Image (cartoon, rainbow, N blue to C red):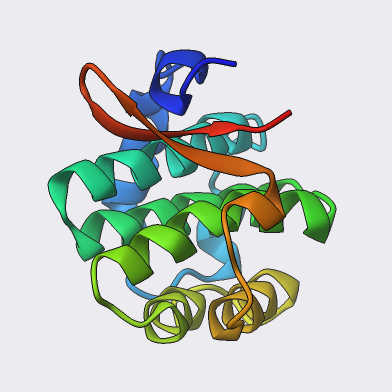
Length: 153
């Protein structure tokens, strides 16, 4: 299996980045209503890709953008919580590796989303203490371009 930055297309990152750039500090329903639901795929893909970029750049700010992209994607397309949590294991692990508190970082992003299942999921997941890459089906890999992640299955 290929590493994330190689296997996950970034051809629509520009769509997701434009949405993140105009997202208000506190996302409300009117902002979500302004988004095309098809943008959830671009946001979700960028969210996963940003976890690797955050690790490579040693940047908690990039982790926050990863979480925001993932959160917005889920607000637009309500995926199964278990599927979302598989992806959230990456920014959780990166946050911890960068020496920050996943509980704090996830809560900050969750507080910027509308109250509801997505913000609750982010807060609850960030507060967990049992997260490992392997438990969520990931492994860390080193590529020619730097650290990355890939699915175990």
